[in-house]
Image 1 (cartoon, one colour):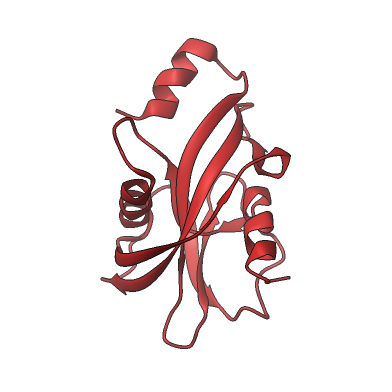
Image 2 (cartoon, helix red, strand yellow; image 1 turned 30 degrees about the vertical axis):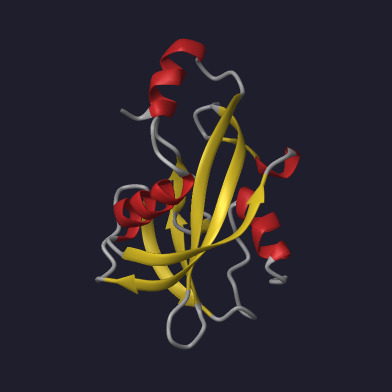
Length: 147
């Protein structure tokens, strides 16, 4: 069951607190994997909303696999983010206030295969990230000391 879709049937576009997880994945050169979102044409990292009964770590693993085709292991919790900087309004008018656990994946296996949520992917050097980054990802990158 997709929890957010089910809740939207009940509350429409009203603000919703959404727990989720995201993952930093780096290649052997220390470059960060970023995905270009199809809905807002901004770059982000793999992640998404928690389903009922999942742990945050399970959410991180599932969302990464769904969005990239990569199997991540040996996750390390980087930090948990919440507050007004993580408010997001989707193009359809849905509003979420995200509470997001962000992990660092120490291993990632497989080849990248995107789902419909993204149109492109790229590993970026940390000092040359794209300018059009999804708003909820900016405070995460700032805390990671990435400008």
